[in-house]
Each structure stands twice: as structure tokens, then as C-alpha cells.
Image 1: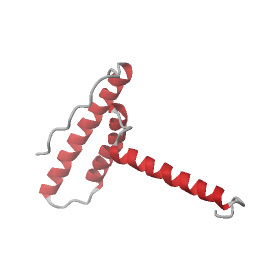
Image 2: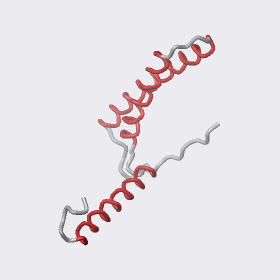
Image 3: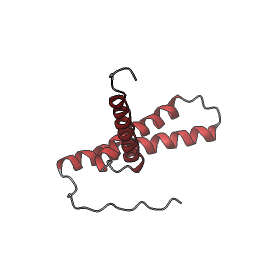
Length: 108
């Protein structure tokens, strides 16, 4: 890549711009600054679907673990349905632009 342009300053500027863009993108991803209600749920649905799939496909032998996996399946399927309903509602009637972020409840 360093020989892409004859002037080394041009090459250095491209590398620097790419590094700044990468760092900025990383900060946005880590802070979740660009994640709103709908995009949050759209990202969580595949996550929940993976939990359902792995709980169904796991080669479980202990009945306690099977019971736990079945509970995970039930909860995740219910939550996927709830997220899909909320997405549809929010897409038809979005939250007002001036609404404030709601704090997360502390973990138990």
C-alpha cells in the first residue's frame, strides 16, 4: 500500500485518516451512542435466536441442564415475539425525538 501514491505524505495522510475513522467508529460502537430502541431490538433478535438454536441442538444428558435449556428456549422465544411487536409499534408510532434515555435497572 505504501507505493500506492508516489508522495509519501499522501500515503501517510490516507493511513492517518483511516486510523482516525477506525478509532471514531470503535468509540461509537463501544459507547452504543448510535443504538436506539429499534436498532437495539433488531440486534438482540439474532442473539436470542442463537440461544434458542444452541439450546435445542445441544447434546444434553443431565435432566437439570435440559430443564434449564427448555426454560431458555421458552423465555427467548417469548422475548423475540415481544421485540418484534415492539419494533412494529415503534415503526408505526416512534418515540418523540426529545425523549430522554431511561436508566438500566441494576443487576440482581
